[in-house]
Length: 279
Image (cartoon, rainbow, N blue to C red; front, side, top):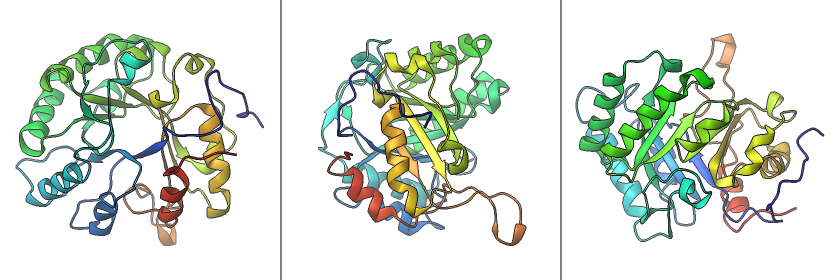
């Protein structure tokens, strides 16, 4: 199998593996999903808050409450410094920020076409209204030519949060290696199980620890959940979100977001990751 390649420094257990939620639906539409994230023992690294394609035009009391509950549930949890600092990359500050339970504001970069001022304005709204711990930069460019502008954006977002922002670049595939130096985590896979099970990891990722990479996979059958966990391990992804939900709407009704609802095997994911996963 193409993904079974031993990575330096990877042990038999995924003790640092956790869940990153790329964006549950609005708390009014997904109250169970948001409540589950506050359950004791949930190995949550972060959850993305997407109010209305961004922070919205005004504070949403339901989103404010959901973010507050999540933050309070992980108050006093174990802490770590910036993954960039720990892996020898650029310092992000962030020492003393909670390891788990971060709330990240959703910022759409539109593959590099969005105006810088709009991005920063939305970032300030997220901080002022929802007290976010960082940002998820969706549809982030992957090419080398776009790196300077993305670096400009991430440096500004760090300043917005006084050097303590947790930044996740939502590429969806392996970007130019330099992107690893401007954010805490990179989403190097986002897509269906049919592609993930045969995917291959870029060689340059072996220079970084698993906590730097995120895999988001939909359409994973329950019977293949263990296999998906092994792929994440061998490809070196420390933050994951697997779901059996499909991106195809029922009755051929077009596409839908498979990450907005709770996976059908959520309890199994929590139980497998919580104590660590080994082969």
